[in-house]
Length: 96
Image (cartoon, rainbow, N blue to C red; front, side, top):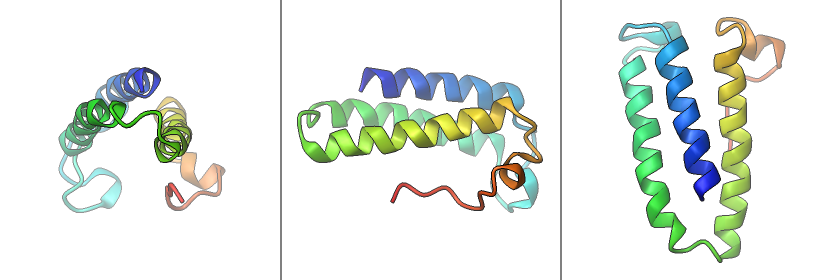
């Protein structure tokens, strides 16, 4: 779980640096830079509760899926923020 927390911290730093200010990021009403950063911070805090369950198979699968999603988000924030999803042919993020 420590790796997930480290990656969430890196993701938060990238979001603070690269996301635009405003209340409607990329045309999504109500989605703001602050809301995204708050969500990342909440996920970081929640990861401590999941650490108690870590030997479970479900937590292992969750960690693998989270790692992929966090990497995708970090790539998005490191690349051209406006054109990344179109280039990668991605329309939604899914953990299924």
